[in-house]
Length: 588
Image 1 (cartoon, rainbow, N blue to C red):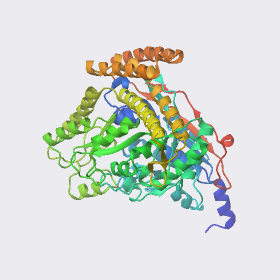
Image 2 (spheres, rainbow, N blue to C red; image 1 turned 120 degrees about the horizontal axis):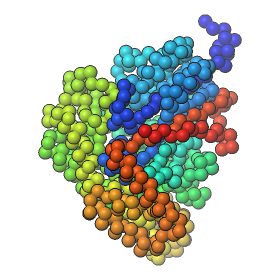
Image 3 (spheres, rainbow, N blue to C red; image 1 turned 120 degrees about the vertical axis):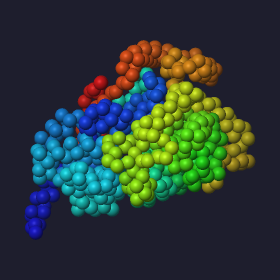
Image 4 (tube, rainbow, N blue to C red; image 1 turned 90 degrees about the horizontal axis):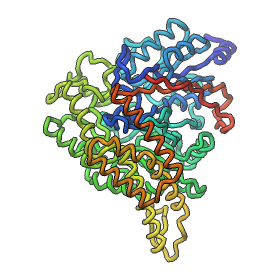
């Protein structure tokens, strides 16, 4: 037993390193596949779109949230190279190292754990992230502790801290390394994590099962949401935010409170988030527009109504309504479901493309450890024996026995589905530009109509109602100005979208959209013409590189952030927030 003095000494000596896995990503090596690029859009949404695909790397958001909410002195390493990681370990002084990883990166995590054991054998190794769900993980990685669910409360309990302290939200951007047509993406956004988990409990969903099919709110009120946005705006100079929440408007009262706060403070923040179709139907498009949602990820899955969240909903009509109000829709479909054969999978691909969403994700049906689906398939003996974990990422071949498809066919069908979407509707960024323009024009017309006819927003009914004398809607005028800015950000790249279009039909579509921009906003400004020239040159260079190599990988820069020991989990003012330290991107 330790004495009180020894316990105090041990606490003082505690230092934690939280790290993601080591790069390079998107290469075939001993630790992973080239198909696992660690890029969300390019990897599984705008795949096969060449230089039209937006490129960026999302930060490991959880690491910063964890570090912000414990008292232990903590260092975060995001996107480290092997040299970065080993240098950090060789510095010494870490009593604990937490490694966060997804299933396909398990071999990278193992390599890192082996190095820790060889250089610092007394250091405790903690594993977390979706990779922690791998069964019998102790046979793959030598570790001391594992966190399979929610991490903030787990770490607080592990280090003997008060788990019920208020959550301090981190101030971080959504991504780094952003570019399109080889030119840097100028617009930046912050990340807000309202909560984790999903109660819809789809049997294949790793996120829902990771958090025990429950929702844990970090930001419990609209006021807390607003303060997190305001803090990020002051520190990062951003007004756009990605809401990392599986179904944010599933809790409408908090969303309504957030809208009330924005209206009161005259701050029309913009949001990209996730939603189920039934939630969109419940809250309504008018509310989403007023709230500032301009990007929505919706799971459509299959035209066969296998899921309660889409049953009885006209998805094509819903998507068109969202788009006409300026909300980009990323629809997500699943291939190789249990009912799929050669005929029905072709029908589902055609159906998903026919929804005409701006962006379309195709993912392979996959029994991921920790899910009910994985348990069912394991018990039924349907999992491919000894299938490598590093290949289980949903963009290669499936890892279970399907009665109607060979492994190679699953790869080919998936790739062809992306190609068909691209050749049918053109680049995703072109569709997004058209949606942004349509939304600006629609909302402008609706504001004018409501003012003429005396309609005002009623928060109780969550709709516009007619009054005898309706005051001017100043907040929606602010929202309209924001939508105008959002539409215009696409304008300098429209010529490149046309020039490198996959076919004549798409090129003509792009030219029509350019004309619509002209009719709406007039001639290009000097700044827009300058940016257009920059994009034209960078797109030419990028296209030459793409034709030569067929793939362009930009490795994300290292981010190293130090959180000193704190006496309490208090909000850190912007002036005290430590800046990210990043290295230059490596180009391969």
